[in-house]
Image 1 (tube, helix red, strand yellow):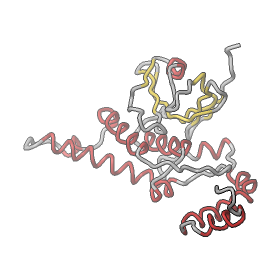
Image 2 (spheres, helix red, strand yellow):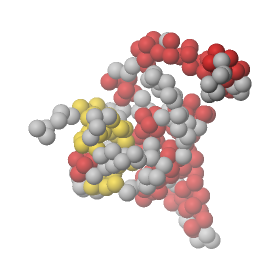
Image 3 (cartoon, rainbow, N blue to C red):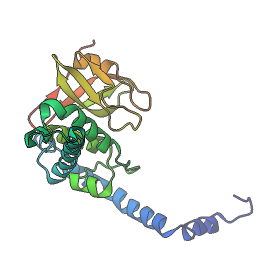
Length: 237
């Protein structure tokens, strides 16, 4: 700022020169921040409510499932060519098609835009809002991905909240079994690839995980799906 400039005039001009969207956003932010305690209180989720947030039958989730299943069926038709096959062979089969379906689900959720929210509030988007707005934060992405994998026939998918080395947390989706191995999906990281993190145990899976901003995970703090909720103590010391 010019040393001779009037700071009050400069501030006024700054606000006056804002585009309409910025003025509105600043005004709305002031309102939200004033009532953030009420919003945070209303957005708190108990364990039962958190579990119910994983909803494979929710309409928006079912719409996404239908698109994935349709694409797989179309790919089967294309692969069959002129060959005569029974209609059931062209239908989605969890046993043979889940890997392709899970990858499609992962990419669909990963493609959602970030909220870029700088507000000091906790706010959960509904699945319909995620679909219509095309955005979701880290936790909402995991809820959606877990619900979608469940709708595609995965019985072991869980939202796993990881404790990071700096004391913060990071949600991911895990699924698998001791026989087939465990997989970790980080739909919050646009550079993350489907199935790149796999291990024989969940602890091995987590111990090798690094977030998109290079933070290491130490353990699972808690995890859940629509049927169960588990919390874990720190047994390292």
